[in-house]
Length: 156
Image (cartoon, rainbow, N blue to C red; front, side, top):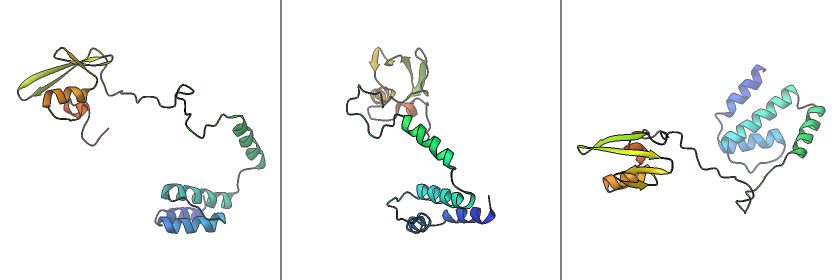
């Protein structure tokens, strides 16, 4: 990469969004309604490099067009959830496997919670979440993951 191109791209990081929008208009020849700083920087940097080193070849453009035409692109979420499973529940890979026993000493009492395939067992009751168990123990809402030491405050 030419030194002046690297300098121009590095200079983009110091610009405000308003300045980036002006720069975008100068580089692309048209204004943008975009206001995301990262997006503006990436687009302007791409254009600067394409101008300096050349754009995609006609063959590459044709191949990209062929691939795009053959692809099933979804632009909106389907109204009927049975059409496609677009929202997978988040995996809770931080949880121990079913059968594991979580222990915690709270107010001088040793607490034990058994991880089930669907929920958590504590004192012969089944709860849907660790937070529900923690609420049953403390009497107030708190993060079950934090309460049982599966997560640290401020970290996912």
